[in-house]
Length: 586
Ligand code: ADP
Ligand code: MG
Image (cartoon, rainbow, N blue to C red; front, side, top):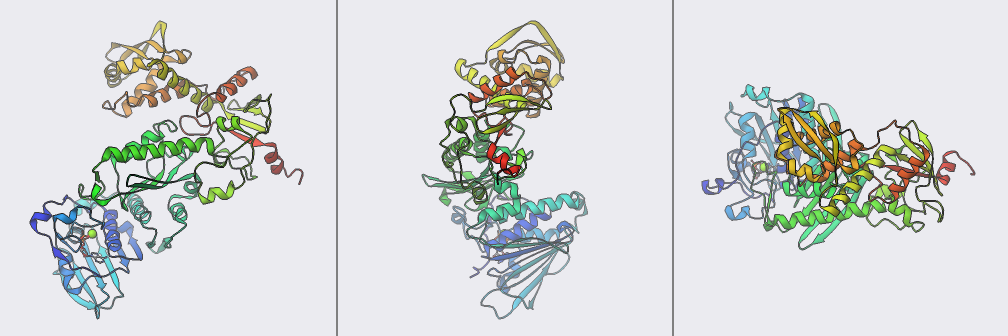
């Protein structure tokens, strides 16, 4: 039943993080959907015209608003969700500031039609800065319809700040996605202009299907399921395999007690967990839910309620990092390449198996983590990938090179295809890492003839600012001018690399992330940059012994199944799979 709406006392109102909530059409849609969810709706439909600038309609089957409360609902700091400051602790509703409808009414024309369960009829109110609020009777099913027209009609300057329709639509889409991933029990329907663009039925079991509808089938194929509880914290959802990373951080969803938030503590934990398997410039995908005692988290820190504050931020971070780190580590050895007969399409074949796994065969154990259903159906019967053979090493022997990019090798199971740049990059990176771990710093080789490198003045400053840290990574640099550096030493492992280009790469990397970046914290990223730079480029002819040497190195390198950018480094196609491909022996 709908609780009555009250105006908050100034005292309480002043304790609420205040600010502008209406920035663009998407912010209105967000507030309206949140209101519908707070009203207990099972079904919400959203329609927009001209990306919401002309018209937004959100209709729900929630509890409705009492006719006598309609005018009050539109006034600032009027809410049915909290009474006093005490209620702010552990607030369970998405809204509580009592400001959204008032803010919307101040920048657009607003009509609310509604009916509660116990009312004889529905009620409707029109609002907007140039109309007297007017409440009248209407027919309306149980629930509420909010219609917003002509956004920023009275503030044309703000209207100009709106981006293209396409951009605004992307924001709308993001808002719906975020909210729909937070409430699987609610049905959502979206119309864009005259077109029905999305229908998400309520779902209890197959949550991954909704996620795939919103984030793409690629997501469900790459999703690793997580479900972990400890000390009052429950983390569940999915993280994407590193091979499914993206160039933008646009598929990262995190919910605290059902509320979508962008939290720095969490962002940090996730980045740390992925740092060894993902290059800095790539972004992992994840949809994660953290549930905890509501009194352990403060949601009242930001006007759009995007941020939260954990009472025990460190505990949350450690729990998240620990869980994700373990899952990602287990995932690598356990992940089996797709074995369905299909044309060779490396990026679509799932993950290659890791060398560790190849070496421990023939007992391929079932994966230690839960595979998503869709993935399971592909991998129902994991079978041994390599026949035991004393003479043939796991990655076999090279037979040749393809277009200067791939090494083709033959092992006891069949065909091995290695991306030689990616493989070399991983080897170099792991070697530099262990060199650093063993000796605290990377071994450096002084150059007989120092090399001059031209850089920007900002990069030169940066190099000097971080000289000690770079030295610990094996790069010895002096300043030789306003915009030039002298390279006196390079990491021993990279002594063959083009030193000038290496320095330029590392500094560009540092520069992009800003001088404030804590270089020591980010050492692995810099090592990865160096490793990538210094690795064999495509189109280099390798001799058969050189190729075999690379294969042998891969076999003894940690994480050799993927390069530092999270791309696979090799795949195996068994004779059986090749036979099936050629319809042989059927
Ligand atoms: P808040 O959500 O922070 O309380 P709003 O300005 O968004 O503030 O809404 C004011 C009040 O109007 C809410 O507290 C609620 O009682 C009522 N309300 C708004 N939208 C709906 C809806 N879709 N269904 C039922 N009640 C609603
Ligand atoms: Mg609200």
